[in-house]
Image 1 (cartoon, rainbow, N blue to C red):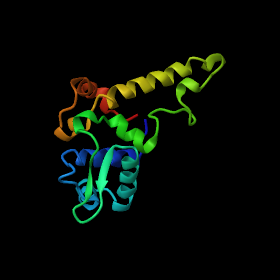
Image 2: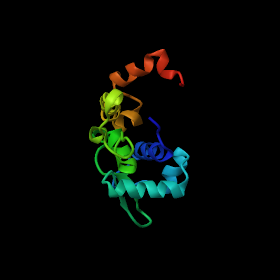
Image 3: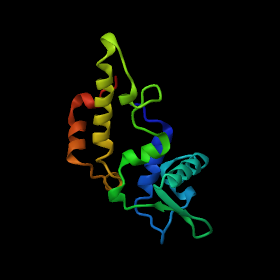
Image 4: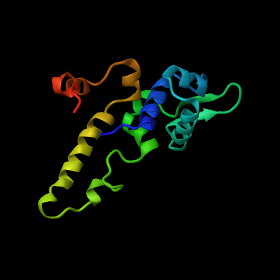
Length: 152
């Protein structure tokens, strides 16, 4: 999986907003500075996240952004989908809509398995988990394998 800068920035911004609320919203500049994200890029990402219902905002001198739902209920898959669309696509289509023939016929099942594994991680890790530095044990177990850290 290739994580785009946009997806990475979106997740980092949402994690940064984990302790914000309507009573104490965070300014774009504050989030950008805390996470070293270019302000103009972050403004566009927050607009997408707001349109998707992931964050809320208020204008004005006391305004800013906060999560639309508790950080414990917001998973990383939702954040990534809000800015990038489906987690796994093959030539712009969901894997279940692709048909292969001949020797490549089982490739469809490979793409669906990839999506299932990706969902297994991203749908079970919440913004609160990341913000607190307490990832689910199943996710931590995946990082303990030496080969998990090897670039290929």
